[in-house]
Amino acid sequence: MNFLTILPLAVVMVAGTQVVAAVLLASAERPRAASLGYLTGAGAVVVTGVTLSWLLTRVLRGPEARAETDVVQLERTASRIDWVVLALLVVLAVIVYLRRHRTGLPRWMDRLRRAEPGYALRLGAVLIASAPTDDLTMAAVGASVARHDLAWWHLLPFVLLTVGLLAVPLLILLLARGRAATALPRLRAWTDRHGWVVSEVVIAFFALVTVLDLVESTRRG
Image (cartoon, one colour):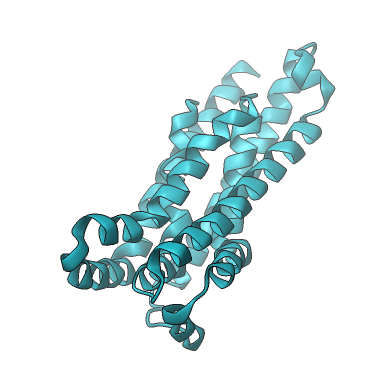
């Protein structure tokens, strides 16, 4: 597996409430400060989540995986991790599908128009940490990278892309300026309608890659 394969899952991380909150913060009274706080909180949680999953998977693989002294045991462990990742992806796909009709803004989002940077930071952290789809995605990404014995830094492109996608509303504000008043609502509406479809396509792609890894492991075994 090329570590770039995990990058599309960043779309799953932000599709939904996460990007809607980013749009609203870009329309707040202090859009730059609030948006930067939001990105900081979200980025911190994503780094922590994928790192914990990566570390846990490394521990479960055991020292024989790192030393590569037992090829058969290594392949068996890798296959078990692949099955776990595949199960996470299936659960993730089901959750995304069941939530496909959830649109509209929760009442607490009205506060975002007056959000301070500190509140935005906490919000970014809570939205990522409390979303089952994000938790499952981070677990799958960290486990997959560790399963292929890739170093921790291979997680960073995924983290940067996730934060980058959340930064799109702020970039629209900075670049489009006067046109942002129409561009941002369009982005929010498009995400509400089509975000779940994009997420399902990405999940299916990563699941296919995982299945191919399983097939390869079976052949070697």
